[in-house]
Amino acid sequence: MNYSKLKIPNHIAFIVDGNGRWGKAKGLSRSGGHEAGFKNLMKVLSYSYSKGIKYFSAYLFSTENFKRSKVEVSFLMNLLTGKLKEILKFCHDEKIKVIFSGRRDRLSLNVVSAMEEIEEETHQYKDRIFNICFNYGGRAEIIDAALDIAEEIKKGELLPAMVDEDVFSQHLYQQLPDVDLMIRTSGEMRLSNFMLWQCSYAEFYFPKVLFPDFDEKEFDKAILEYTKRDRRFGGIDYEDKSN
Image (cartoon, rainbow, N blue to C red; front, side, top):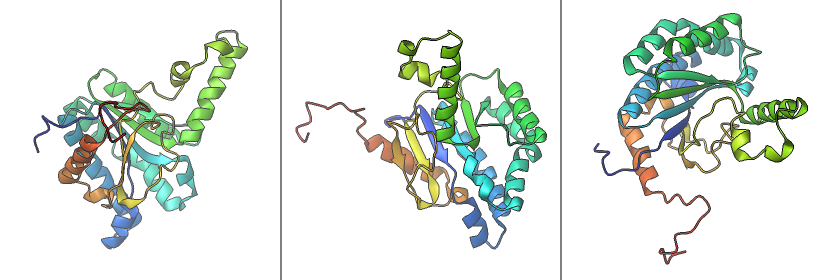
Protein backbone atom coordinates (compact mmCIF):
# COMPACT_ATOMS: atom_id res chain seq x y z
CA MET A 1 0.00 0.00 0.00
CA ASN A 2 1.19 3.52 -0.84
CA TYR A 3 1.81 5.43 2.40
CA SER A 4 2.77 8.75 0.79
CA LYS A 5 -0.61 10.40 1.48
CA LEU A 6 -1.26 8.79 4.86
CA LYS A 7 -0.59 10.11 8.37
CA ILE A 8 2.26 8.11 9.82
CA PRO A 9 2.29 7.80 13.63
CA ASN A 10 5.63 8.56 15.22
CA HIS A 11 5.04 6.14 18.11
CA ILE A 12 2.94 2.98 17.92
CA ALA A 13 2.17 0.97 21.05
CA PHE A 14 1.04 -2.63 20.70
CA ILE A 15 -0.77 -4.85 23.18
CA VAL A 16 0.22 -8.21 21.75
CA ASP A 17 -2.93 -10.17 22.58
CA GLY A 18 -4.40 -13.49 21.50
CA ASN A 19 -1.29 -15.65 21.17
CA GLY A 20 -2.50 -18.29 23.62
CA ARG A 21 -5.98 -18.46 22.11
CA TRP A 22 -4.48 -18.71 18.63
CA GLY A 23 -2.36 -21.66 19.76
CA LYS A 24 -5.32 -23.50 21.26
CA ALA A 25 -7.41 -22.87 18.13
CA LYS A 26 -4.62 -24.43 16.06
CA GLY A 27 -4.39 -27.48 18.32
CA LEU A 28 -1.16 -26.23 19.89
CA SER A 29 -0.23 -25.32 23.43
CA ARG A 30 -0.45 -21.71 24.62
CA SER A 31 3.35 -21.71 24.47
CA GLY A 32 3.12 -22.67 20.81
CA GLY A 33 0.91 -19.64 20.30
CA HIS A 34 3.47 -17.40 22.00
CA GLU A 35 6.17 -18.84 19.72
CA ALA A 36 4.07 -17.92 16.68
CA GLY A 37 3.43 -14.49 18.17
CA PHE A 38 7.16 -13.88 18.57
CA LYS A 39 7.83 -14.73 14.92
CA ASN A 40 5.03 -12.45 13.79
CA LEU A 41 6.25 -9.60 15.99
CA MET A 42 9.52 -9.56 14.06
CA LYS A 43 7.56 -9.28 10.80
CA VAL A 44 5.30 -6.50 12.11
CA LEU A 45 8.31 -4.59 13.45
CA SER A 46 10.17 -4.78 10.15
CA TYR A 47 7.11 -3.68 8.17
CA SER A 48 6.25 -0.80 10.49
CA TYR A 49 9.78 0.60 10.43
CA SER A 50 9.83 0.36 6.62
CA LYS A 51 6.76 2.63 6.59
CA GLY A 52 8.39 5.40 8.62
CA ILE A 53 7.40 4.55 12.19
CA LYS A 54 10.27 5.43 14.53
CA TYR A 55 9.09 4.25 17.96
CA PHE A 56 7.41 0.91 18.58
CA SER A 57 6.40 -0.20 22.08
CA ALA A 58 5.16 -3.74 22.69
CA TYR A 59 3.46 -5.12 25.82
CA LEU A 60 4.98 -8.59 26.04
CA PHE A 61 4.68 -9.41 29.74
CA SER A 62 2.73 -7.51 32.38
CA THR A 63 3.21 -7.49 36.13
CA GLU A 64 -0.14 -9.32 36.33
CA ASN A 65 1.03 -12.11 33.98
CA PHE A 66 2.79 -13.76 36.93
CA LYS A 67 -0.70 -15.01 37.86
CA ARG A 68 -0.65 -17.39 34.88
CA SER A 69 0.45 -21.02 35.06
CA LYS A 70 4.09 -21.70 35.98
CA VAL A 71 4.59 -23.39 32.61
CA GLU A 72 3.42 -20.37 30.63
CA VAL A 73 5.30 -17.87 32.80
CA SER A 74 8.47 -19.94 32.50
CA PHE A 75 8.13 -20.09 28.72
CA LEU A 76 7.63 -16.34 28.45
CA MET A 77 10.53 -15.68 30.80
CA ASN A 78 12.82 -17.90 28.73
CA LEU A 79 11.70 -16.51 25.38
CA LEU A 80 14.22 -13.65 25.53
CA THR A 81 17.13 -15.90 26.51
CA GLY A 82 16.20 -18.65 24.07
CA LYS A 83 15.83 -16.23 21.17
CA LEU A 84 18.75 -13.98 22.11
CA LYS A 85 20.89 -14.63 19.03
CA GLU A 86 17.87 -14.40 16.73
CA ILE A 87 16.77 -11.11 18.32
CA LEU A 88 20.25 -9.61 18.07
CA LYS A 89 20.68 -10.64 14.43
CA PHE A 90 17.28 -9.15 13.58
CA CYS A 91 18.09 -5.89 15.38
CA HIS A 92 21.47 -5.54 13.69
CA ASP A 93 19.98 -6.29 10.27
CA GLU A 94 17.22 -3.72 10.82
CA LYS A 95 19.40 -1.28 12.82
CA ILE A 96 17.00 -1.24 15.76
CA LYS A 97 17.81 0.04 19.23
CA VAL A 98 16.12 -2.06 21.92
CA ILE A 99 15.17 -0.68 25.31
CA PHE A 100 13.18 -2.31 28.12
CA SER A 101 10.47 -0.82 30.30
CA GLY A 102 9.42 -2.49 33.54
CA ARG A 103 10.61 -3.68 36.89
CA ARG A 104 13.43 -6.23 37.02
CA ASP A 105 13.23 -7.33 40.65
CA ARG A 106 11.15 -10.48 39.95
CA LEU A 107 13.13 -11.53 36.90
CA SER A 108 15.82 -14.22 36.95
CA LEU A 109 19.46 -13.31 36.49
CA ASN A 110 19.46 -15.07 33.11
CA VAL A 111 16.57 -12.93 31.86
CA VAL A 112 18.09 -9.69 33.18
CA SER A 113 21.46 -10.59 31.63
CA ALA A 114 19.78 -11.21 28.26
CA MET A 115 17.99 -7.85 28.48
CA GLU A 116 21.22 -6.04 29.30
CA GLU A 117 23.06 -7.77 26.46
CA ILE A 118 20.38 -6.78 23.94
CA GLU A 119 20.45 -3.17 25.16
CA GLU A 120 24.23 -3.00 25.03
CA GLU A 121 24.49 -4.66 21.60
CA THR A 122 21.97 -2.26 20.01
CA HIS A 123 22.63 1.01 21.86
CA GLN A 124 24.39 2.60 18.86
CA TYR A 125 21.26 2.69 16.70
CA LYS A 126 19.21 5.89 16.80
CA ASP A 127 16.57 5.94 14.06
CA ARG A 128 14.46 2.94 15.08
CA ILE A 129 13.53 2.36 18.73
CA PHE A 130 11.90 -0.84 19.98
CA ASN A 131 10.59 -0.47 23.54
CA ILE A 132 9.88 -3.89 25.07
CA CYS A 133 7.51 -3.65 28.03
CA PHE A 134 8.43 -6.67 30.14
CA ASN A 135 7.24 -7.23 33.71
CA TYR A 136 5.59 -3.88 33.09
CA GLY A 137 2.60 -2.10 34.59
CA GLY A 138 1.45 1.43 33.86
CA ARG A 139 0.49 2.13 37.46
CA ALA A 140 3.80 0.73 38.70
CA GLU A 141 5.65 3.03 36.29
CA ILE A 142 3.80 6.07 37.62
CA ILE A 143 4.44 5.03 41.23
CA ASP A 144 8.15 4.46 40.52
CA ALA A 145 8.41 7.87 38.83
CA ALA A 146 6.72 9.54 41.84
CA LEU A 147 9.11 7.79 44.24
CA ASP A 148 12.13 8.92 42.21
CA ILE A 149 10.87 12.50 42.29
CA ALA A 150 10.20 12.30 46.03
CA GLU A 151 13.74 11.06 46.60
CA GLU A 152 15.21 13.94 44.60
CA ILE A 153 13.09 16.43 46.57
CA LYS A 154 14.26 14.83 49.81
CA LYS A 155 17.90 15.24 48.74
CA GLY A 156 17.30 18.85 47.76
CA GLU A 157 18.00 18.13 44.08
CA LEU A 158 14.50 19.17 43.04
CA LEU A 159 11.94 21.64 44.37
CA PRO A 160 8.25 20.62 44.55
CA ALA A 161 7.29 23.72 42.55
CA MET A 162 9.51 22.50 39.71
CA VAL A 163 7.49 19.31 39.17
CA ASP A 164 5.35 19.57 36.05
CA GLU A 165 4.39 17.14 33.29
CA ASP A 166 7.76 17.46 31.56
CA VAL A 167 9.68 16.74 34.77
CA PHE A 168 7.40 13.82 35.59
CA SER A 169 7.87 12.35 32.10
CA GLN A 170 11.64 12.46 32.56
CA HIS A 171 11.27 10.05 35.50
CA LEU A 172 9.34 7.38 33.62
CA TYR A 173 11.14 4.17 32.68
CA GLN A 174 12.10 5.57 29.27
CA GLN A 175 12.07 9.07 27.78
CA LEU A 176 9.85 8.43 24.78
CA PRO A 177 7.40 10.63 22.89
CA ASP A 178 3.73 10.13 23.69
CA VAL A 179 1.98 7.27 21.94
CA ASP A 180 0.14 8.27 18.77
CA LEU A 181 -1.59 4.98 17.97
CA MET A 182 -2.31 2.16 20.41
CA ILE A 183 -3.28 -1.17 18.84
CA ARG A 184 -4.65 -4.13 20.76
CA THR A 185 -5.32 -7.30 18.82
CA SER A 186 -7.92 -10.03 19.58
CA GLY A 187 -10.92 -7.71 19.94
CA GLU A 188 -10.43 -6.89 23.62
CA MET A 189 -11.19 -3.21 24.21
CA ARG A 190 -9.21 -2.14 27.26
CA LEU A 191 -5.75 -0.81 28.12
CA SER A 192 -4.93 -3.43 30.77
CA ASN A 193 -2.59 -1.09 32.65
CA PHE A 194 -0.47 -0.35 29.56
CA MET A 195 1.41 2.96 29.19
CA LEU A 196 -1.30 4.92 30.99
CA TRP A 197 0.68 8.17 31.04
CA GLN A 198 1.95 7.92 27.46
CA CYS A 199 -1.45 6.99 25.98
CA SER A 200 -3.27 10.05 27.33
CA TYR A 201 -3.98 11.37 23.82
CA ALA A 202 -3.38 8.22 21.78
CA GLU A 203 -5.81 6.97 19.17
CA PHE A 204 -7.03 3.45 19.98
CA TYR A 205 -7.57 0.66 17.46
CA PHE A 206 -8.99 -2.75 18.41
CA PRO A 207 -8.94 -5.29 15.54
CA LYS A 208 -10.54 -8.67 16.23
CA VAL A 209 -7.71 -10.62 14.62
CA LEU A 210 -5.46 -12.58 16.98
CA PHE A 211 -1.89 -11.33 17.00
CA PRO A 212 -0.19 -14.20 15.10
CA ASP A 213 -2.57 -13.41 12.20
CA PHE A 214 -1.94 -9.66 12.31
CA ASP A 215 -0.14 -9.29 8.97
CA GLU A 216 0.84 -6.44 6.65
CA LYS A 217 -2.73 -6.00 5.40
CA GLU A 218 -4.00 -5.69 8.98
CA PHE A 219 -1.28 -3.14 9.71
CA ASP A 220 -2.33 -1.16 6.64
CA LYS A 221 -5.93 -1.15 7.91
CA ALA A 222 -4.74 0.29 11.22
CA ILE A 223 -2.84 3.10 9.52
CA LEU A 224 -5.80 3.86 7.23
CA GLU A 225 -8.04 4.15 10.29
CA TYR A 226 -5.49 6.34 12.07
CA THR A 227 -5.33 8.62 9.02
CA LYS A 228 -9.10 9.23 9.29
CA ARG A 229 -8.88 10.35 12.91
CA ASP A 230 -8.98 14.06 13.77
CA ARG A 231 -6.46 14.56 16.57
CA ARG A 232 -7.17 17.86 18.34
CA PHE A 233 -5.57 17.26 21.75
CA GLY A 234 -8.41 19.02 23.53
CA GLY A 235 -8.61 21.90 21.06
CA ILE A 236 -11.24 22.75 18.46
CA ASP A 237 -10.97 23.31 14.73
CA TYR A 238 -13.05 26.50 14.45
CA GLU A 239 -13.26 26.11 10.67
CA ASP A 240 -15.12 22.81 11.13
CA LYS A 241 -18.78 23.90 11.47
CA SER A 242 -19.77 20.47 12.81
CA ASN A 243 -18.20 21.51 16.13
